[in-house]
Length: 113
Length: 112
Image (cartoon, helix red, strand yellow):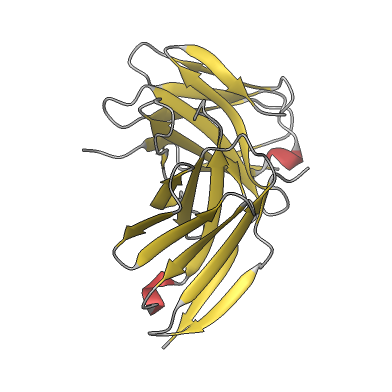
């Protein structure tokens, strides 16, 4: 089975722009979660989507949003980028059953200048 | 409020010896715990997990122990190999499963 894929792998943007990141989960997985990793804050949960609905949300401002399509692929969007949004953005997928393991993609490295 | 804590930022072990990585949690609603291994600029790689109904789970060289009364879990790697050198994260989730809370990570260095 193919793993979780994320595109693009690297991205450079300037302050004020917006960005869209994409995630394709493992085949058969219906839950997609997004995380942000920064040196200062570690790995932090952004949100989770299941059956095209946001099921869980972390403590991030409304500039961070996401969606999930009927084929379980997910996108996350960050509007009005700030320097502090520079981070590794990770997507993880799971079967969405309680106690199921999440498997991570390689991440998208975003640099905001 | 850090619900999952890894108090040792780094650990150095000799090849062939045991590596013990520790993790503490505060939320008694957590019922599923995982350990991930991570290299810089890559996604975490799943290692091993344990449900709260168990106190031990083994997979090859990796064993995870869970002490619910102490809200403590540990990962044992025996024997340690240089290829095990990486940052190790413990993570926890409540019954909904979709939200993992991560510790800050422990950087393991296994010296030949």
